[in-house]
Amino acid sequence: MNLKTATRIVQRDGAPQTQRLQADICVVGAGISGISAAVEAARLGRKVVLVDGLPALGGQAVNSLIGTFCGLFSNGPDPYQFTHGIADDILRDLAAREALNYRWGGDWTTVMYDEVALSRWVEDAVYREGVTVILGGVLRRAGRDGRRITELDIATRYGDVTIEAEGFIDATGDAALAWLAGLPCREPEDGPVYGTQMLVLEGVNEDHHPPREAMTARLGEKGREYGMVRVDGFSFLFSGRGIALINMTHVETPLEPVAASARALEGKAQTDKVVDFLKAEYPAAFGDARVRAYGFPGIRQTRWIVGAHHLTVDEVRAGKKFDDAVARCAWAIELHDKPDSIVWESFAHDHVHYVPLGCLTPPDADNLLAVGRCIDADVSALSSVRVMGPCIATGAAAAHALDLAGSGSVHQIDRAALRERLYDNVDRTD
Image 1 (cartoon, rainbow, N blue to C red):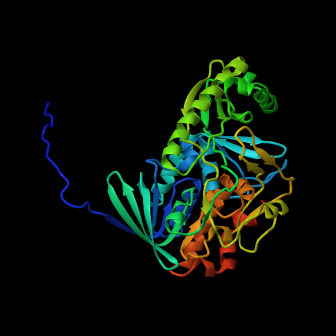
Image 2: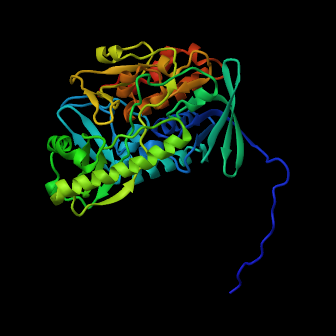
Image 3: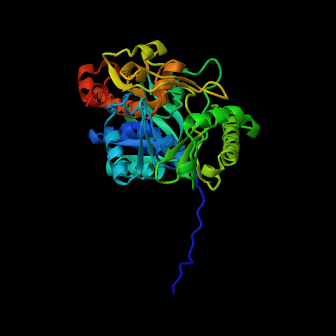
């Protein structure tokens, strides 16, 4: 057997070289909104570069174990789908792999998914559409020339990259691109909005899984005895698999590196107390369960853009329909602004609320749009439109807006043409 043993000695010589990439559209953030934007832009024939700080695609949808598509359907016993585009492809392809579990309710329809299957779907879609991907890429600088973003400087463990593009999409979740470009941003004024450390349990005995209402009551009665911070939450069963998705923690998600790292460790400690509670209080259901996965810290609302339009909770409650609507939803106002509980305000079966293009477009930039939880709204309004359905829809809208704008301004595009392109996500009701 001939073994290779030869090596060579290398040493950095002088300043490191920066690799330069050019694109039509650069998307920063590979969560579900960024994936929607990148895939949609590529299908429009645009050259796309997609950047994410993690070494894997999928953002929170995959790596934080969100586990449910919320906001994809209307309320009530006869729901119709609000958001299409990649949502259609995901629902079709994951259903074929038996990786979905529809939870049809009298008021809500949510769709549980296998995060491993979604991860592979995302990777295949990005690869198939020819998107150039930079993983483990940390945004360091956003260059501007007047009203236009011109380039981004990205740091990776393999060297630096500079990306020049005609248009940019901020799908970072924390408005990091807009922030580094010096554009105004919003943060919650009256304390943090808490995130959640999710986990997946396997080996759950489904026959003995308690009803959600009973579990919520027990949490309120006994959760503090186990040292739990949040004393509400839920356990969602993936029917037929003995798997439960657990959402019972509240963790601060500060935008400061040392504190953020500390809170991430605190979140894991909270989940261990949740497991202790479940095993002790419901031994028939969870006594033999084991943790399959801890997610990355799940972040809800931290920092977002100041847009041309500021969506208000009154507009959400009224179901105001905008001429430049690009997304719709009927999800509840779901505000996680207290450590121990949440504010939940649901809507009637015929309720629909909308997101206008103005919420995606910073007024001082011509070639930048924000998507997902980066869009402009007040704290309560954002809590109702930051879920998966509207995130997919705003990602698609940003791709089409930049496609229509070309080298011009997203503030001056043909909005009727954009509305026609986005018919499935705004007006379709079949």
